[in-house]
Amino acid sequence: MALNGKVAIVTGASLGIGSAIAVRLAREGASVTIDYHTHRDAAGTVAGQISGAGGRALMVQADVADVTSVGNLVNQTVAAFGRLDILVNNAGIEQPARLVDVTEEMFERQIAVDLKGPYFAMQAAARRFITQGSGGVIINISSVHEDLPMVGNAVYCAAKGGLRMLTRTLAPELARNQIRIVNVGPGAIATPINTATLNDPQKKAALLAEIPLARIGNPDDVAAAVAWLASDDASYVTGTTLFIDGGLMVSAGGL
Ligand code: BGC
Image 1 (spheres, rainbow, N blue to C red):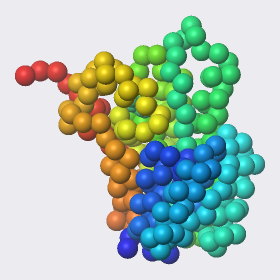
Image 2: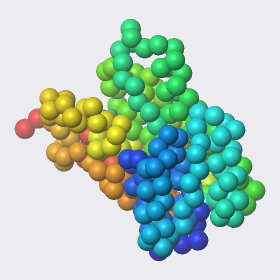
Image 3: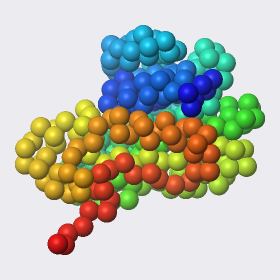
Image 4: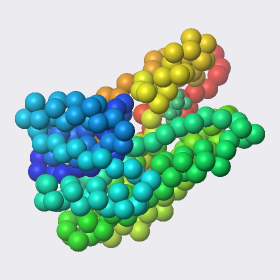
């Protein structure tokens, strides 16, 4: 198994893409910390799925927007499993709204969860990786919208665009410590974050029309890419983004 003996943290691992990543990393042999914020029962289901298949899982409640909470997430992981090798910054929120309707609270919460959270989680993980002296991998679950504008969703796009630049800037900084940082940019994946869009037939049809492979993705599509990026098979990959989007980023008209 590609991740035997490795220890991973997955933030926002109770639902959606995060839960699929946690289960997949465990299937590849990693011990996994399941970070959750609100959905304790769902996190328990993910942990149960992992231990039921013979894997090791630890549940930790944390608010990724809180720096102390994030430090605690790393400390508890190391206390339970002895080390840390992989951080998956997956937790994220999205509150689409037009410029004229966004409140200061909406702006601050999205930036806190989607940009500040990953930054300080990277800091806490990098400190641990450097202490251990054996490298590490950070995978940020970004979005096609780290690059692609989306009308009515500017704050989310700005946070993901910021995440893109964090990865591009920190990858060369941490390369000397053999720490890799990669973004994964999902397109339209069926998860709780976009239930409203997928439940609206008109919006769903408009979205599908933009996707060359003509289907909504599923969390396992993303989890498979994360498992590869976390493994030594991807040991020469850093500072870039892998889009898992059915071609959404290269959607084009024509014949
Ligand atoms: C958003 C989804 C959206 C998708 C494609 C994702 O980052 O979270 O709501 O459907 O991008 O536009």
